[in-house]
Length: 282
Image (cartoon, rainbow, N blue to C red):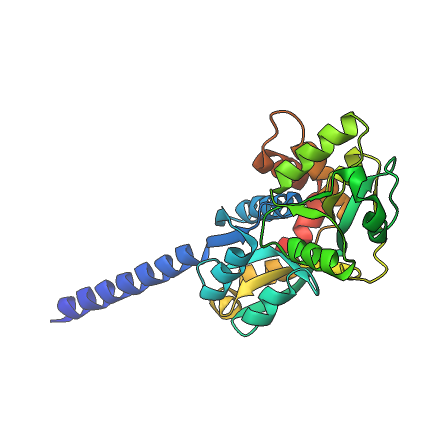
């Protein structure tokens, strides 16, 4: 009888151990959503590399901006580090703020607007009213539905501009800019800081006297609603995760080198910045 009780107790303890082991393993699995903008690719991969150095198993999934927000709101993703506030992603946050946890800024000094090469004879968004022909009546944009594209549509209406906003992606916009710059042709592109274009080429933002694009923004970390309770260690790391504009733009330039892989450039940055990474993980 005593041996039977011991066996039962041992079996129960083993079951508890397995349960705790399973929970611990689950707590080391992280799903991060991101939008395929140059800055978000850098930040997401750096965070992934840092978390993996702490023993986490990290899955990152590229999505359109709206889908990225929805993934965190529904719990399909644990977090994202690409929420531009207070302006660019205002509509997403307004709809979902009760379903997500706004952890806080990971990058400060961010900005959106329209940019041109400095040789272009434009200095303000208003100039396009009379000089749209300089750029064939086009503003080269990124993915439709992005906050920057919504702000661009608003700018066209507010300034009554005779231009068309061309949908595309970060990659197609950058390719069009490179082609124009190589030929010293005028071009207007949708732009944001941080972005590697400002490190690669001599660019300037067009003045926005109506303030359609808003002022300085922050890029924020957003988590699913119960993450702090479910995984306080991970939440603490996310709350301490910070990058500077220089950090991001440096890695963005690395990513533009031939054959570069974001996971590898992120790992390189993590290796070269142990003190910054240590501050997140401790």
